[in-house]
Length: 217
Image (cartoon, rainbow, N blue to C red):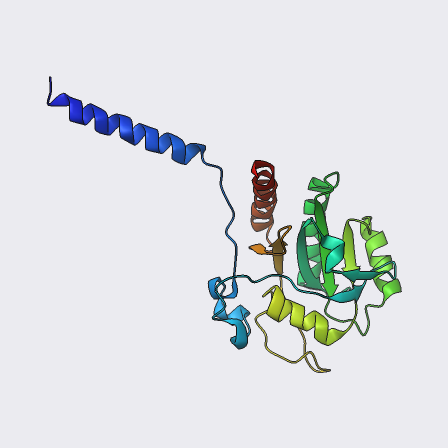
């Protein structure tokens, strides 16, 4: 009988470990530049392995209001880069982002931020008309325009959403399908293909996970 005791103890230990592993809530990864595809990261930032945050910015939304990082204080938000006249990936991205918007429309912890990559043509009235056509609230989903170099630096050096290189000049152009999930501390928590329903389903799941993470804390 004694020889069976170790086997029983091993079994009980295994079951206990498995229980706590299953019971432990999922925590989303925090992404720093070193964790991201190097093609998406500016060369000057590729070795950064901690403390990456969304910094300060100053843009203008579809209502003509100033938008800064402070508008997203204590908010989880999803961000992307688009332009109104885009005939290819942008309509697909807007459709998928609209799905996420409606999933969390009543949740005041969740916001959305879409940057135009063609600020020279996507003026405040153009963005307002675009937002009205979609039928979304500017309090929750902000479409922003502003200085092109600032927007392109956000895409490349803050959110790591674009593979292309450039200086934000006249001939520079960013075109990316990436959605980026940002937490309340301005840390990057996920990257998603905004043209893919399956990947955006994953984004929705991750937002619920992140909300649960804050509930646990």
